[in-house]
Length: 263
Image 1 (tube, rainbow, N blue to C red):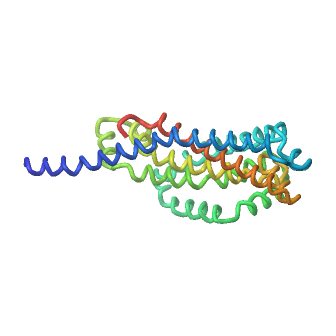
Image 2: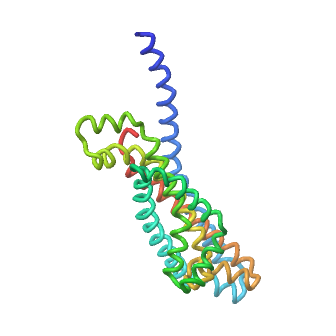
Image 3: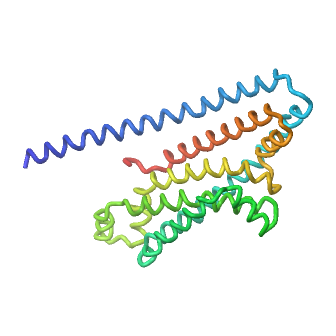
């Protein structure tokens, strides 16, 4: 009996070490990512103030224009991300309950097929069907960002140890209480990983909705492509990449804030 206990402890020790190392690496990224964003952005500011740009490039990269496009991009990202979480998490929970589990693979397969389609095709098709503008762009971005959160919600809940669920029910907890106090807290790290992925997808895809009149940082990018102004192309691409890194960092912060202690 003692030998068995010692073997179990020896096996558990490397697992705890790996968890601590992963947690340390995750927390290190909390400092690395914002520092990288700040350094690169300061480099962009220095380049913008000292670069020899022609009139079109200066107009495209003017600070008021970039500020307005950034605000539009953030609005698209925030609204779409909130819709994704509000739809995908409850749907993922539903698809792990009772008879709905049967259709879960079908729903995920449909979502996979939808995300496999080119994002610009989805944006343009929805614009032709529903019209151009902000809310059509939000719908397209929400549909495109739905899969990672839905898939990770299902995977996270299915990965919860069934004995813990049975233990909760055994002490008199209702099905809802078990879901809220046992299953969701344990599945939260996996769900938040899906949310981070969706955030980055939405930020990147939001650069394309300028084609349907929804604004965003893609406007400067498309202007540079149309007018063959390479400084505008590179500068706008850098800004979009920095925004994606910043949003991904916010997702990591939220994951640490909402993660239950001990997980």
